[in-house]
Image 1 (cartoon, rainbow, N blue to C red):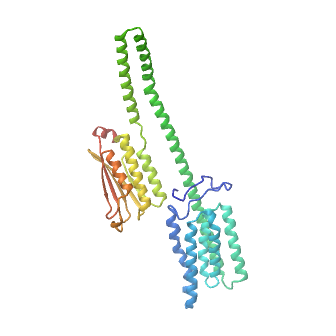
Image 2: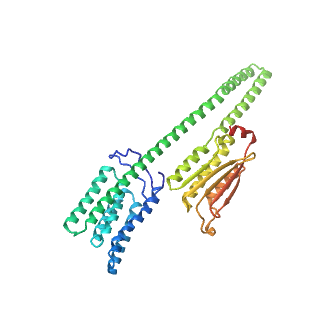
Image 3: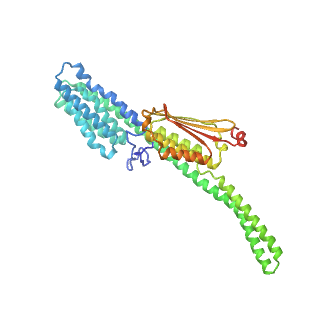
Length: 392
């Protein structure tokens, strides 16, 4: 899970001595469920409706209590774990206090259990929920008359939602572990690439520099012996070797891919999905064979910027990326399916300006439209000599 608030200490879910810092419940793909589940909190009002007519004061008081609970819940899911105890305590006290008039307050206690199950190891979570249930049982026996519904609904609802919280925690920790492994693989790939570059440059330059050194020493000896013509021949050969070496080094450097387009697409897709977007990518295999290192690097940076813009400004929940190849060009279309409500507010900032500048560096054309949804098209001329190789 990646987000602004999802700084994670990757540890085993069973390791309670170094507990992981969980991403916020209001971040990433969890955000939609965390807010959407508030629909079920409306069961709070069912007993009030069934018990009509009730005094208007009762309705106003219960509605105020419900709004306070929802406000605390929204604040809680946007807080780190260390700030939660005060919020959860207030939520619990509210639900208990309003249960004197309305047994339906039992339905909202489960939201507290869900938060506890997500942010805490299972042993700690069970202890916390158990203490909460013990208090409810004590209140039921000591103070409530004929409110078995409060107790039973609280117990069942809390246990079920606590279980959902535990499952969400385990799934999140599994995702974080996978992200850590993927990051480790990227680091190892970078190390391997640096080693490959070092070997290539050594192979290219080692023999040539040895020859240049020997010819320079020979030319010096010939000059010392006043054999000027022979020395001139060696110096010319030395200059020719230097030119060949320079060409070989330039070729080796041009073959170094600073950014992998496929890796960038995979990384951006994972980032968007972690933030609640559905992502569709349509791309042919071996597309990198069509591109020079410069083209691949600039396209990767363009897609990175488009992903950043989507995360910052998008009003939608879906993105599609398509690559289309013909005999003359490679066409790339990036579509954000969020509806643009007010075109007058849209101005091309540094991000879109940077995309146009990067495209110009590789002689690509860019088309940017916002009606009805943002659509960015890039058309890149393709070297026909590479087409057959790319489609194999």
